[in-house]
Amino acid sequence: MFTILHANDMHSNLIGVGPSSDYTPMSLNDDATKGGYSRLAALIAQRRQEMGQLGPVLVLDAGDFSMGTAIAAATRELGAELQLMARMGCEATTFGNHDFDLGPDGLGSAIGKAAASGVVPTIVASNTDVSANEPRLAALKQLVQKQVIRPYTVITRGGLRFGIMGLIGYDASKYTVDPGGAVFADPIETAKTTANLLRNQESVDVVIALSHGGVMKGDDGQFKGEDVNLLQAVPEIDIVIGGHTHTALTQPLLVNGRPAVQAGKYSENLGELKISLSGGKVKVESYRLIPVEDNIKGDRTVQQEVDRFSKEASQIAFASRGYSITQPLAVISEDWPMKYSDLESGTPLANLVTDAFRKMENADIAFTANGVIRAGLTKGNSGIQTVYDVFALAPLGNGIVDPTAGSAMVKAYLTGRELKSLLEFFLIDDPHHPGEFWARVSGMRLYYDPSRPKFNQITAIELGELDKGYSPIDFSESATRLYSFTCSLYVGLVIVALPRLSKGAVQLVPKKADGTPIKHRTDAIADPRESTGALVLPGSGSMEHEIAVTSAAKKEVKEWQAIMDYLVSLPNKNADGISILEKDDRAKEVRVIQAGS
Ligand SMILES: [Zn+2]
Image (tube, rainbow, N blue to C red):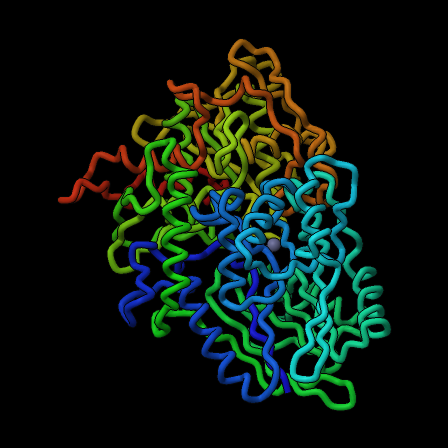
């Protein structure tokens, strides 16, 4: 008998999910936040103790350990995620797509910091090759030499030999933002070779794959996807610990008795898989997800570390723009959700975000895609939303001239026809990522008819806003008026690549105010999906400095900063002087309107 405790897609959620000011891991039953590393650490210790009486216990993670919170904003400088995972007992993890968001150099720096602290899980990266002759891979190469990163690892415990491989799946490797020379081999082919090696050369008793591949529920209600395919294709694998799709599986998916499991996301659950072995075959004895909630008292030492990292991240990422991580920005009286597949409930938050962009950049039109708004706002007990909470809305991307965390805002000029062309692209849904591409706008509204052919669904676009009224935008071929258009660099890199991504269906040339083209590097997107792609992600290219929107201080404006500045500027304040954020008519306004509705 042995037990695997597992997590995945923790995405730097060192603090419980919910409003961060509610999170009190050292006092019980007074908040509804979920997750948090000190609680998870305490739970792991407790389960280890109990299950350890039955046999060996392994603690494993399936990748995407970084990117997403305000503490991740300083992941390169602190390496906090991996240090704390090791402290809570995690023995091995693997790479997820988002772990490359800051490039292989950023990732190498984060792992290097954790390794230098003396505690780091083994990073098992069976199908990630960092041997290319590319300077940005130097730090990762060094970590391979030090065996912090390995093609596989073997853990001997309680008389059993466990062979562990780590795979980044097809979808995840395809949408890795900035691999910068790292090459991902076919996960299934790699798994076959590695499993064979583990069985025959390393003589392991159990083969475990950490798979950043995942599963999704099909129309028939059955879970399917890469982690199940892996078990089917590679019979030598006994157990798949999955990730990437953020799926909370309440029971294992079995292929001939061999399980694939996944524990959701953000440290909200710990998976506990109890396995017996007979005649070399695994059998699931029991499985459950244990919610990480306020009935678990946090581990004091881990919480002290979380507090220390939080303070350091505040200095590194936010101080230059006058913010601190625990600073309250607004108070809400109800949740402002962001579930991509529910466009209606996400509209108020999307309007807030795009209104903030437009105000900051003084543009005619502000734009983002639904899936780039990475979190909602949760009321919790106090309703207070801090810098930590608001950063989670816009954690993605990099600067152009400023290396601190977060996407820079960019601005360009487009004709009405070009505007229509790009908006058409974002009306096309990807069934694998429902709602993630949906256009979110400020300063305009559009009407579309989904019964018309793709790239020809928009029937009208109007410039204006709710209080001042709207007037039509001429998008005929002969119309020459230019409209100023702002979005995050992250989204901007997708937009400049649309002509190629859409195989010519989208035509646009981002321009300066005088109509001359903006020069940019567009050789970034390698392999788009058939329809629109998940996050159609740029490679390492970046736009030229001239299009960075600069504030008076000649600093880039960060996407998160635009949102925070907007919240602070709201006129209604409570008794403590904190902005009151309310779902008024402007918040509820539908700006992408289905014709006839
Ligand atoms: Zn992922």
